Image (tube, rainbow, N blue to C red):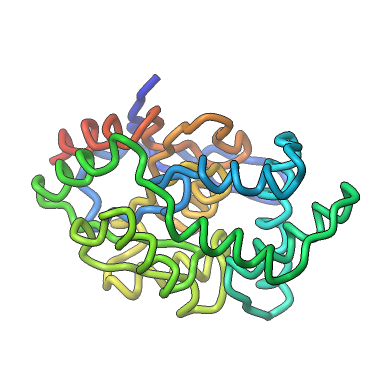
Length: 251
């Protein structure tokens, strides 16, 4: 069900969540930041390619995604940076090895990077972006993918024209959902955190944005859920068009 909330994010204190709700008007965010993979782009082709490499073991695909995110966080927490596609390839090798499958580094990188850069947009995405842009919103992509990667993704998916700016964590060297990354993106667009809204299909990304003082809209793509311990999400909808329908009612 598509919803919009009239409360600001809750806050976390220690190990318990204490709700400090305050009513807010449905005011327009100054900038809409969009996650890319799965939010805008359909991951089905990538899942099919990975499934082939894993000898059809589709149940392992979600484990690979989780492992990829895990090691992106490990990389940042250790003060390091590596392109997200390379982390994806490395973790694909790891998951495959745990299932008795050997994948050469070159094969893993070619599979992950080439496929992820040629993903199609979800069916409703272009119409929704057109609607938001026509309504005067500033649209910015904000992704863990590299600058080169997202540029190719948008060119191949036909999304370049819709965005005012493309931001990659490559510039700051820290992956989402680290708070410093959201702070950098807000600063880059010269807006305060509370004037930013992240639109994403991942509960971890939405949680990170909310804890960084942003507003957020969650797209409940299949298999995705909001994180129950995170602050309350302002908008929850089944696709981007439904998010857009809500946002154009904001004043």
